[in-house]
Image (cartoon, rainbow, N blue to C red; front, top):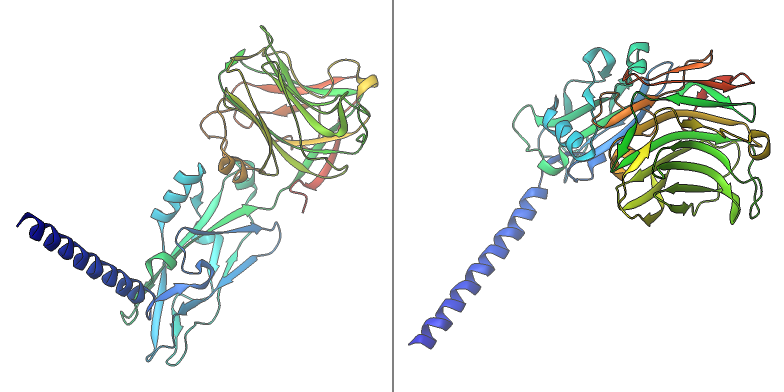
Length: 394
């Protein structure tokens, strides 16, 4: 009897499994059957598209609405703002995109139609106006999260392909300073720092690099020192490596870049210390990492520089353009780096100092964070300013 009950139970479970599998297959077929979706999603959920907004004129992008097969009747759709999708994106990517105000963009139509016998709509055009000067200065980020909805109830919208978030990034053109062997950029931080984790970001373009071991080494970039061996040190070149590799030092450990850098080229650099690891990202991609002993990094508020603080004539052979320098009191993730390479929300958690270096003249620099930090030119030579530079290298 017990054996009979066992086999009966197994048969029942198998039948239930078969029914479940069949219903799943039916569900898949139903989902894809005669439903509408935005072509750029390719039926995938959580789809985003970045649009670089130019400074002049309107920037355009476009999409179509598709059906899985030609419709047997006319049908129409509309678009609504999908705040939930944008909130989800911001949470997942540690960004602070806001919905673009209606005055900042236009849609070519408010009603999207697919005629009988057709399986796609005409192009829907989105035109985005240039960012205002106030928006640029505040480094605000804007997005247009759109959700497709049926207007006449004739066709359903595919959930996974009915929503898309357009991320509008302002084209990055700004004045940048150049330091060389005659000067440095010296920071005066508000506090002495004791950091269990930290991140440093900056954009850099250098015009002279060595290509052999030890050649033109020790061309310093962002550097800071403190008591008990505290150090955040970055430079091009070291005695045992080529002059076109980066060398990073902290907690008594060193990291050399895998990349060999080129002259007269813009790079976004992110150096991330989690306490027990040190990572170097170049243009948002992980270049190299090394383990760390987990020490506290101590930095003196008056001992932070961009450039060679001593023996400049001996070591610094190049002119170095810099921009978008940020010091964080937390370890950034790769997604945070990628989404904020050329502008960051100055209210971001853990952002301790943010120097855009875009003043265009003079010998002092403002902390966009307005956190009591300052920076100025130190040395015999004046900083050279170059206007209207596109720091994303495009």
